[in-house]
Amino acid sequence: MGTRPEVQYDQAGTLHAVWIHYPPDKSPQFFYAAYQEGRYSLQSPGREALVLAPQVGNATLIGPRLGLDRERVYLLWTVLPILGASAGAAETSYVTFPLGQPAAAFLRSPTGQLRVPYGYHLSYQPLSGSGLQAGPRVPLASPLGDSTPYIIELAVNPAVAPELVVAFQTQLEYLMRKEQAQISAVFFQDGAPIAYQLLSFTPTVSRYPAILSDQAGQLYLTWLESGAPSGYSVYFASTAPDIRQALSGLTADDAGRLAAETIFGLLGGVVLAPWLLAWVMAPLVILGVTAPIRREDDSLTSPGVVVSLALALAAYWAGKLLLMPGLPSYVPFSAWLPMIPPGLNLPLQVGVPLLIAGLGLVVAWRYTYYGSERPSTLFFLLIYAALDGALTMAIYSPVFYASF
Image (cartoon, rainbow, N blue to C red):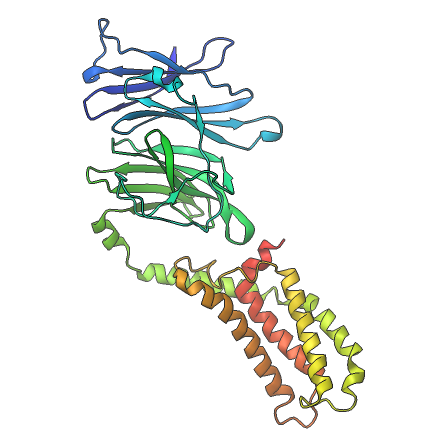
């Protein structure tokens, strides 16, 4: 007895079907059949064939899912281990063969495992000869590098196209060494996965994708995001030019939401300012140790003061980088503003820390040395640390949270 059937017509009107059979005391079996003109009869039953009997052991098997392009059939399935060290992991595999020729599945490697890049710093390239208007993609060249097999919740394009696209949920690296469930897609050509796209990049769980192509090769995608008052928000994206034009503008709601997230993110970081005590302990010790070289002259024209302050500030920055090692690689405000142009990444990474440091130095100088009859190296350090620490925690709080 079969269960979990999936069916799809090809361009010639042939109905392709897959299902799973659970024989007693045996591994589950994947069956396939092709029915000319979508009809089943005793005289032409459809050439039902056993394609594969995957060995799943103590794991949950999800699938098979059926996908077609104009030349080939694809069967995809996911295995979720439930016992042992692999519990909580996931692997998605596939087998492919020409339309109506399941026996050809064993003329090549019987199965393949899907893997996608784990990181989000991706090199997108135009792909020549692609049948879908999906834009630049990440080539799935071998070796793939840092990658993950965690692929679940498959959504196969139900329309027949020159290539097959499959959307899914996968667990990927997120900002500052965190990990989050995102929606991605893999493109198959000639029986192999050849390209990849990361479709969502949000701090909340993304799941349950659905994908469809039209006759022009444009793609339409939906998925759910957790965290809304109702439980989920529904997201929609498309490559169709008219839809892109209609949805690409920044609305007042978008601007308000981004502004609110940024403001609350900055305020939430300021409350971490007491942690700057961990940064100033070593600089204070250095000021005490170097007090003899300052003697009675505490002005900035004194070489001893310059050396003492330079060593104290160097220790302050060393402590800050030790506590927040991801600070140099973080793009300021990117945790709240996801659409920062890539060309601004480096200027923000370099300019914001320099601006904070420069502002701290100017304010500290203004209140301790400028026109002051009793300049104080100690007050200079404390004022600088207070202002620099508050601004750093406000802007770089995602780095701080990711460090623990």
